[in-house]
Image (cartoon, rainbow, N blue to C red; front, top):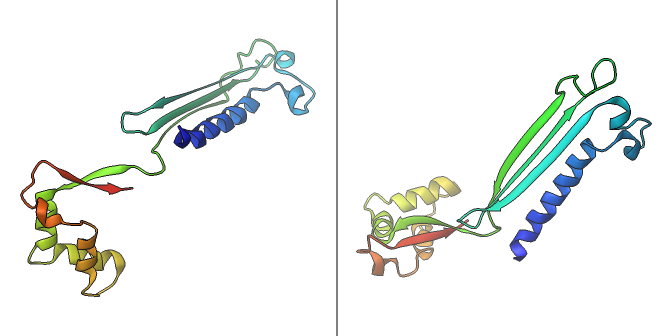
Length: 154
């Protein structure tokens, strides 16, 4: 539940922000209101939880100004915006390689894991491969496992 508090705060903040778009001008310190000039506005939003622990947020706002004669709100849509975002929890896990694939990668004769470490860290240190192997404790025990996967914290 605690991981959803920042999302709830974000939704409330966006709701307040979009709410001011549609607020009457008098409420914002102006002299006219929506009903004075015939304009109309709408804002909506939704939040749903994804199966992977993520949260999808959708917010939309629309403002239609008054017609040229000041009546009816038939002046066309001046502003319309919809935004959708998917937010993962602060810490989640992504499926990586199988046990067999990981062992093959770490033990490959061409040093693929070591080569990747050097490219990503711009470091020619030969200890790089050992550092990679340390991230997969006891990986050799899973060298024949084609069904189980390593999960990487993201």
